[in-house]
Image (cartoon, rainbow, N blue to C red; front, side, top):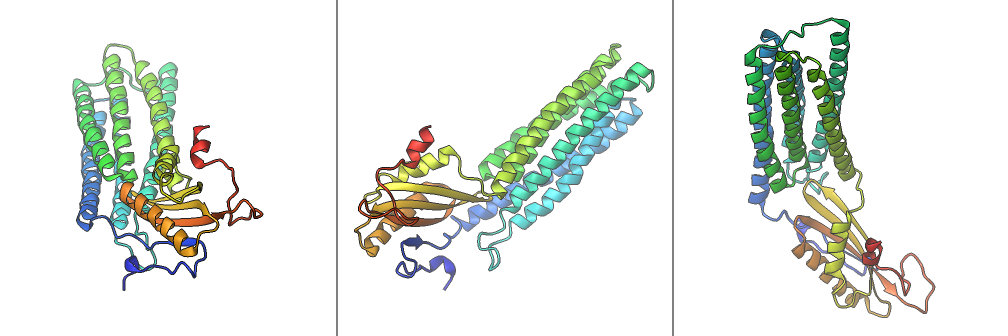
Length: 345
């Protein structure tokens, strides 16, 4: 019998009620989600490959350092896009004996890769801007102005990347895929860098070459901030950071009204790609039988599984409330703060 359909005996687990993995909500929806995510990665990869070749060649032929630097940025996008596509393929593999929660955490690893590349790109753009300022004041390099075609290519890049940003972020939010969202934010960064190149080329043609490196330096700081945010959020998923206040309040609001739940002790949640696994500690009347405590815990499980999207598994620990007994790690004290009260502070 598959593990999803087994139930543990509460008498063997003391005051702990555990349910095995809920099957993925709908296998077809799960498969469609993976297809959408991979499509977003591949379309972004193809667009970056085309833009990298276009901007690099026109940057050289059109004497535009700004467009050439943006082309090199797109080349790095192609490099990490290939890496991300591999991780995305792996994340779509079904659960197995060694990975009962599936391989969706590969999405967070892919997001870490994207974040790291974005930070590296930001540093490279900033350094290139500083180097251009030095060359400008030292009288080195060609700052006579780029060809008009370089300006048109930069504007074309802005238009393409705006469309890619909107579409990729939409897919990322629909699928709750951190890697696709990270790619969407990187496309947005490319909009900023292409705008900087456009401004630099325009003012360079008007005789103000110093605008190019200044715009590049400002954009690099925006890109750096985005990379840090992506890296922080994706590593939080990998390190099982405690759930945010919104999720904790949602769980508290669902569990508190259940008859027999006296208090909520702790709430822990772990993210596996888009899916959640929750550990909830509740306090029940210490004089209840194990069977009645198990019934309350089962109701808590069913409530959370039915009302929270992408909830894949719930563990409920129930501890006794007994004001006449000494408090231990497996008992609850009265009165005490509930989690909801803690979250208000």
